[in-house]
Length: 116
Length: 115
Image (cartoon, rainbow over all chains, first blue to last red; front, side, top):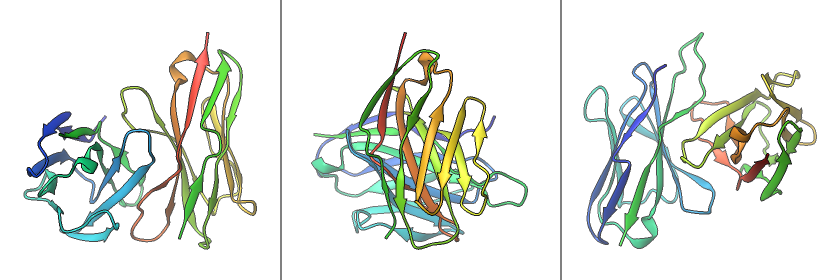
């Protein structure tokens, strides 16, 4: 069964450094999402992406964050200058709206980001 | 703004017994989707079951079923014949039915299935 993949599984970085989290959505999916989950807290929506542009972003998704779909397969989340409070699990998800296909979001295994 | 509330931070159940996890939500939309996701210790987010608000019939998936009460804005998950592998964090989530279907999440319920 097709699945969403994410790399790396765990990233440790120093405060102020840039990180790029990578996701490979399911191949025929058109809608892409990033969420984050700070340890012990609820899952929070960051951004949604469709047709090569952001369709919605949350208040968390400030100028330090950006997303990109550089080729036909990868979907990346970049944090330009990481802060301690960016430490969290970051989940990528994708979905299809194609008629006849299930349209729920399928999640990757997550990237644990630790900012020191 | 839509909100999702899970009022049970932790629950436990004996193996083979039945347990119900509660979820309430708030929205002014008439059409929307509701979901239960399971997050085991591996932290992978796994879809358990979904419900379309326009459907009156409660969704079922094997041992998992929901009690969807649209007027009360309640969406509980029933797990029958609980198994040790059901031990996980369970999240209730909501999305609008429009173009952007971002998920809005509850705080989760930690379920322990005891042998």
